Image 1 (tube, rainbow, N blue to C red):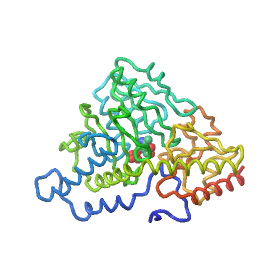
Image 2: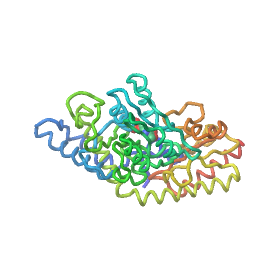
Image 3: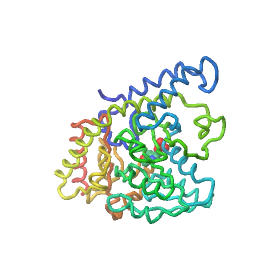
Image 4: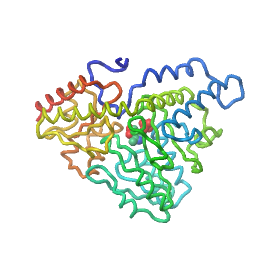
Length: 382
Ligand SMILES: Cc1ncc(COP(=O)(O)O)c(C=O)c1O
């Protein structure tokens, strides 16, 4: 069934920027806007419903990640979870943190603040032409003073999936904690904190069909963090403030749906994504260049440069498609994507990049139409 928020005249290919809220998610959350209003931290009978709902939501998110419910902290989204993890480990000052150049700004800016305000030394690892961090580079960067390594699971622009399990093992061997920003990965590929071996993991609700403004941080049992918000001790004292019950319920419902659908949906989207790539390559022979690793990629993400056109010009000439050029978080910025430049792609190729990200409501006829419309625009422009 069509999603009520999707315009039949503009094909949505920007699921990595944000996803529409699944109607099943809004239905689950609605009673906590309209009826159950009690403060879950009080002893009033009104607190019981919200408290139970929060408990269920925490379990649902935990189950999606293979974690324990007590290891889930609800936050306002991916940026807050990243900040809580990176600053939470390192704020007590000194020491060394390792991250890498294609992280989301929430991690990069948090690291910069540690350098600026807290005397922490930060190493920014490079990536190769496929967008991957070399485990040997991490090995070489670690020192006895390294307290945290923060390397994302999947990149939002290219969809490239880092070798997090291997990297986390290296960090642990040298006594450092490991955080991964899985905002783009959770719900799109199976994510298990045990298999990845991470200590901290970021979840962003609006990338998995929950509303914007809710997320979670997995904090492994025994890992201690400096709080992000001080106050009444909610969320294990890490993030004070009366809980956003309705949004936590939404995230829980989204997590439960994702747990049931991630394998089948991943296969479907991989098929559609590869079909889109094949069709574009056939319609624009020799002009379509894939950005990012061919295999280690989110199933619904296709980042391509079309030679002879700029990405922004191509999308402006194709109003029937909603897609992105650089990261959605920096739209309006005419500079080429920093992620693609960091992979060593030239300015021309980086400026030509278009990110097409598919999701739950993408259909095969849509994909065929996207290929046709983009190819027509590219021929006109180039
Ligand atoms: C990898 C990654 N981390 C973090 C975020 C930020 O998440 P939020 O918008 O929920 O703050 C994004 C959003 O694009 C992202 O792609």
